[in-house]
Amino acid sequence: MKSFMPVSIEVSKARIVIIGGGKVAHRKLRTIVQYANDIHVYAPEILPEIKLLPVSWTECPYSDDLLTEASLVYACTNDSDLNRRICQNGKNMGALVSSASDSGDCDFLSPAIFQHENMSVAVSSNGRQVRNSIIWRDAIRAFILEDLIHRR
Image (cartoon, rainbow, N blue to C red):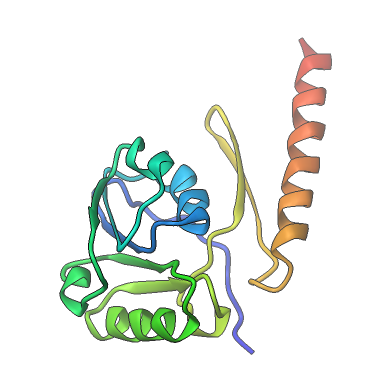
């Protein structure tokens, strides 16, 4: 079993590639766009909500060359075999990869994040209990915001 260490990495100039244009990709992108500027989404079909985000998007089938020069790759398709192939190809090209299907294929995981001003809290279950990570993040957010209200 893999062991993931929480870290923060500088991604403002990193080329980030998301393969997949559905709900999972959209959920990841809502966070990614807060930190990065060079984001590319590729999928045969892309949700209209994704097209409204500040990202480059192309409706096309997956091909290995889409990962060229990527620093981070997110495999967010509904096909676990394709996600595994995307991860392997991304690793072969020197990118760090994350799969929506299998944390065993991942080099990194995206935690549930709460950010307020210059402070961030990230909650991760190492890919095992994603819903609990979100519940914890929301509880921490509520606690911190309530505390800030009472301090003012």
